[in-house]
Image (cartoon, rainbow, N blue to C red; front, side):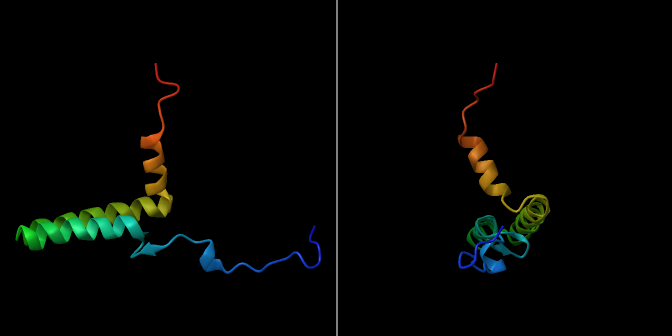
Length: 85
């Protein structure tokens, strides 16, 4: 049921998660920063590329299943075990 005058068009971009290369923005930035620190700071180029490639691939895989997986994981870690034995 729609009431005249109370309908608002919502742009699709407001409802979709922000992804960078298929991974959530925060996870992609964290992963890139860690890989850059490893590759540039410690001068371990191959290790930095491996960390970036593995981390980004895992983030993209997880984001395909649930784009909000990082927020869900953080909330899971904050929750107390109410039903734990």
